Image 1 (spheres, rainbow, N blue to C red):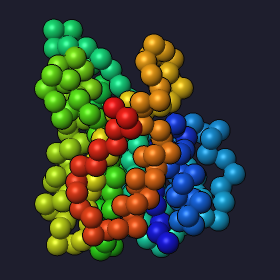
Image 2: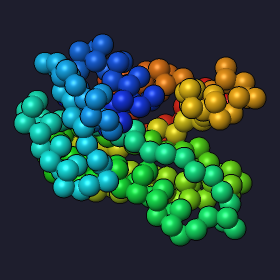
Image 3: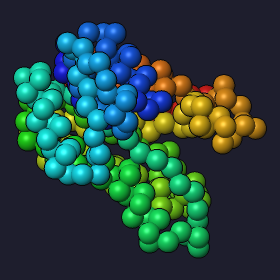
Amino acid sequence: MMNILISGADGNLGSAIVDKLKSEGHGIYGLFGKKENAQNPEVKFKKESIDLTDPKASSDAVEKANNAFGEINGAVLTVGGYAGGGIKDVTIGDIHNQIKLNFDTAFNLVKPLLRKMPKGSQLFLIGAKPVLSANELKGVVSYGLAKQLIFSLADIINADFSDHGISAHVIVPSIIDTPPNREAMADMNFDDWVKPQQIAETISHYLKHPELREGVIKTYGNM
């Protein structure tokens, strides 16, 4: 069994990942956005409320996670957010806001995690399908630029830490079937969307097979 840090543990995707990995007996250190959701910790499910845009708070959380479990050898970083808009519409402020939400919240955890992660550890970051196609990217410029940094971060980790046996994966979902997405796109076929539980199953599979170092993992559902 592994000890896994999960950010966005109270989100639609994060909570599904927590449920899956917890059911398999892993130790979970969950980082929550809302204080009320971080109540009632368990022996193998520690909880903390945190602002992940704060580098020191993020570093302190990683230290607490290591102290709680002895070591952290897996991390799933799910925090992020979406914004639309083409290059004629977005402002530099929009871009910075998306970077803060999608990249800073990951990087602020990645840096302290890499200091102490043992050999064979795995990190899972959440990418975005539009980044893989310029035609899709042109309508989500600020979001796409922020998520592009996630792909680059994973590439750097895999290049810099390959000798240490630490690997980074970017999960690339299509539209995730969540209540907010259903509300925002009510005219679409929800059956085609990838379910949070499917993404959780994919992460579970790769945790069991650390020899798989694919980097980019597409989870598209029926799309």
